[in-house]
Length: 169
Length: 239
Image (cartoon, rainbow over all chains, first blue to last red; front, side, top):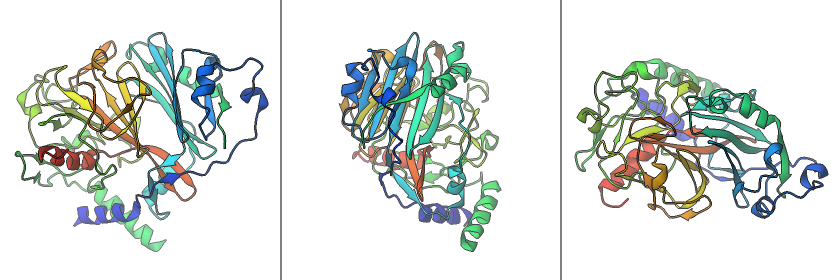
């Protein structure tokens, strides 16, 4: 009976409706989007059709070996470091809609401070800007010893260095 | 509002009640048996999402190419860090019934787990305790967005992101940015965790964005019910 009630509650809460999130576009920052030295072509070409604000850490903005995977609704950019990989992704789609009276998920949506977590040896953080969901992470070759994956300082620093380098409405 | 509050109380009460005695389910195919979603073993290993049989990723393919496969705990199973003494390759680890381990206690916060801590995904053992023998495959059409030291990420056409952990790096069959088809081989199940070894298994998780009103959040959703459904289709010869 209890299981039935929980199942009923969750199934009725989840609508299963997917779509595109509304973006509140930030004011353009010419210095970041049109810098004095052009960003590498791998970045410019990689995100030319991406319709969401594209953020990357400014210290890797000129890394010509970055790997960009993107389309109009999402992007993922990887930076290959020595024995570690930094990844940032942004996505403006949603896969599930919940009714507003679902208390469990209401709790989820409460604004909370940025949190850095280590899971499966990977340090990561998720955050929402302008209505878009972003993820920033670092994965290390040596999960037990590499401080970049054991302590949050490295990733926190990258988070503080995020700049918007492109994307179009 | 009142209706929501009553449901919240009901949910809280049932979440805190010990229902670890829930019977295992059987399915008329190849002897497959499994416990319902959220029934963890041992009960002290975490508070599962009991009763959440919602299929968050309907119609996905099972992430291992072939059956049998076994979903159960690596950490609390035989030979695991907190499990009974023995070999990780003990035959009892390679038997049905399946056990959900999405909300198994780990060190990080998982808002969808009633205990507040969880595992993000589930651990899946392949048919036997051999590394580099069994392929992980794409669960839906999509694009490979990321490959790290021991992680492969697939963004499906649904928009969901699937993570495959611990594949043998040398066996990876795909490249970053490559479009893949459902069922396409990604790599071999192994014990790869960079320079640190883990047990031979696939960690599989699913992340999707949930919208409530004008807000949204990207979260790891419970994969167990979706995998039970996918596995039945695999056993039935229509993966």
